[in-house]
Every structure is written in C-alpha cells, then in structure tokens.
Amino acid sequence: MERMDIVEEAQQPAPPVTFTGRKTLVPAAVAVVLIAGALLIRPVKAGDDARPPGPSERAASAVGMGAPVAAVDLTALVADREKWLVKHADDEASWAVLGAAYLEQARRTADSGWYPKAEKSLKRSLELRPAEKGNFEAMTGMGTLANARRDFGTAKKWGELVRAQAPKQWTAYPVLVDAYSGLGDYKGAQRAMERLLELRPGLAAYVRASQVYRDRGWREDAALAMEQAAGDAKTPAEKAYALFRLGELFWERGETQQALDHYEGALRADPAQAQALGGRARALAALGRGGEAVRDYRLALGRAPVPQVARELGELLESLGRGEEARAAYDMLGGLAARDGTNGVDDDVVLGLYEADHGDPAAAVRRLSEEWSRHKSAAVADALGWALHKSGEDAAALEYATKATETGLRNAEFSYHRAMIERGLGDEAATRRHLQEALRTNPGFSPLRGPLAKEALAAIAAPPPGGPENILPTKPWVAPELPKPKPVAKPASKPAPKPAPKPSPAAP
Image (tube, rainbow, N blue to C red; front, side):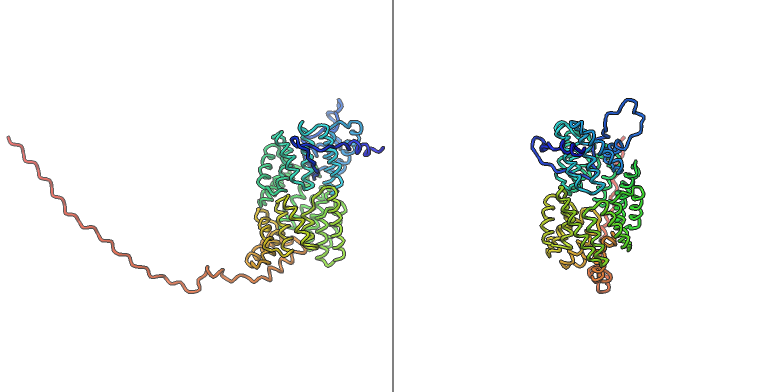
C-alpha cells in the first residue's frame, strides 16, 4: 500500500471536536498555520546537536513560527511526517505538524484541496490529545485553518479557547487578529495585535500589526510595521512574502511604480511567489502595459489559481476589448469558486462582486446578504452596497457603502462604489467628493472602473466659483450704523471732611 494511503487510513476516525463540553463540527483552513514554538520532527540522536538543520526541520520550525516556507523544505517536511506517522500513528504532535504542513502547501499553491487533508490531521491530533488537555498546537491550527476558509466565527472560538486556557500562549493572538478583522471587530483586532507584540515581537506580529494599521487607515504605520517584518525575515521565502505585502500597501496608496518594485523584489527573493506575480500584473495594467499584465496574470493563475486573480484578468481583458478571452477568465473564476466551495472555503465576496458587475445583481444581493449576517467587515459592506446599487436599490445601498468607507480604510474601489451610489440618489456634491477621493487614492485602481470614474467626474458640473452662496455676499458690505455710546456720568464730588477738633489742654 502506498504511504499516503496508510496515512489517510490513519486519519479516518475523526469524531467531532468539543468546545467546553458541546460537540461542534469545525471546518478548518489557513494560509499559514501558527503552531506553538518550533516543533521537533523526531527525537535527535546523540551527537547530532552540532549538525545543521535539514530541510524538514527548517520547514517545521518555520510553520511553528507562522512563517512562509520554501517549497523544497515543505515537500521534505510532508514526506518526513507522512513516513513517520505510518509507524507512529499515536504521535499527536506529528499529526499537528503534518496539518500545518498541508496548510502551508495550500497557501503556496492556492489549492484548497489541501484543506480537508489538514483538517483530518488536526482532528486526529485532537482525538489523541483533546482540547481540554491543552493541545494548543492543534487548536491554533484549527483556528488558522478556519480563518483561511473565511469561517471567522469558528476561528474566533478556537482562538478564544486557547487564550482562555493559556493567556500567554502567543500563537492564539494571530488567530484572533485575523478572526476579529474578518468579523469587522477592528478594535478587538487591535487589542489582540497589541498583546501579540507584547508576547512575541517578530515576523508574525509585525505582519498583523501592519494589517491592523491598514484597516484603521494608518498607512504610514502599516508600511513601517511591514518594513519591520521584512527586516525580521530569516529566509528568502519570508523576505518575499513581506515584500509582496509591502507592494500591496503601495498599490492601495496609488504609488504604482513603488508597488511594482516591491513585487519584483519579492519575485527575485522567491521566484515561486505566485501572489507577487498577481500583484505585478495589477501594477503593469495600471501603468498601461496591458500585454505584460495579461502574461503575468496567466502565470499567476498557472501557479496558484484563485478566483480574485481570475476576476482581475477577466476585467483587464474586457477593458482591452478581448471579450472572448475575458469570458474564459470568468468561467475559470466560477470553476475555482466551485472547487473552493467543495473544500469549505467562503468565496462569497468575490463571487458577489462578479455577479453584481457581470451576472445577476439580484443573486449577488442574496449571496452577500447572507455573508453580511456572518461577517460584518468593511469588504462585505462594500460588496453588498454595490450589489444593491446594481439592483436599483440606492437608498439601501448607501447605508452599507457608508459603513465600508467610514472604518478608516482608504480604498479607491470603496470610494468609487459610494460615489456611484450617491450619483444614483442625485447627490452631486457627495458624488464629486468621493470620485475625487477614489482617483486621489489610486487612479489606476481598476482597468474597467478607473476610466468610468474619470468620465463620471468630468460629467459632473464644477461647483460654482467662490463657493456656496451663503459664503460670499451678493452685495458690497456696508458697515452698520451702531448707536453711539452714552457718556458715563461722573460721580458727584464729596465735600472734604472737616478736620476733627483738637482736644483742649488739661487744666493745671
């Protein structure tokens, strides 16, 4: 029997995991799992203390610290743990490590098919050592797994369970930062991030700090925290990830050339960084280099296919007049979303935006209304508002667009959506203000909607010169006649007091 078949058989008994006595089915998923500390691959033999770590040990240490892993090291770790567990099926720590490795494979390849395998491994670890007995490695793995599937409510439960049992267990806090952010609790995310920085400053903490600052609109702080993450990176994979995230920050700020430089720096550090390929494609499109952008989008989809990249490629092709190719990209989006749905991943935001712009807006409203009932983040509010606008419900749409744009996050797409909703309501001044904000934030935010924003702004009449009527008077100013002040009467002078009589001298 093949090695993987044996591992799969060992994974079969996976009863539901309990939360404080109640049985709860927990979906899993994650981009980078945060397992406590650097977990050992196998007992170290005597005399091996001076040997350099091998590929599997490097990978185990990286996933233990919540850091990206090189592809070759990750492959070695997966093979090592699968082989080990064939003969040591009761090793709960190794099951947790294997789950973490599967999750890192999912992050690198964007293949959600790794998520069910990770879930089985983590649940097997919890079966051998339940959550009630402090299996923090598997618990945080389940939390980060849920975050990657965008099941933020479940991720919050796992993170809070770990924190309740061990408040100083630092790996609980990255889970909580991501979960609170996905739920729209940005103050809770900030508190968890601050605690993480106290307990374990480093790559994982600085990445979360940058994320929190970006969501609050503190752009300089976000960039500084990500630069700290890049400075703390120990491997090319870690450096590439931090540079990619820096590129994303510059992109959102409309600094397209700087974003492009960082994406290319990430690819030099780790040519397998597929996310940076997608980012470079976006920047090239904004710089008018559409052919190169199409090439990079297709390379990114070949290495790590995700629905959002397929949507961006389709819209770029549509803007270039290549409608048939655009439809093929949109078909790919649907296929990738279906794959993700089978593996427990929530793609409702990207699907809802696609349906609103290119499909059935009413279906988008239904989909995103359900998503809003679960996750009240700025991204969901923006998508739901846009779907309502496309369905002709501008009054309802404005409520959600306002929620999305008043969290502090500066996002050109959000501002554009709000401007178009306000235009539908006939509020010309607000439309102008938010169109200007969108184009000031990032004039190349979309190959389709960016030009539409410029056209809409040009079509709106300029405000009257000099400002509104109640600011500049229509007649020359004339000083009013003020009553003259009455003279103040001086008080009557009092007569000088008479001197007191001198006493008469005493008789002799």
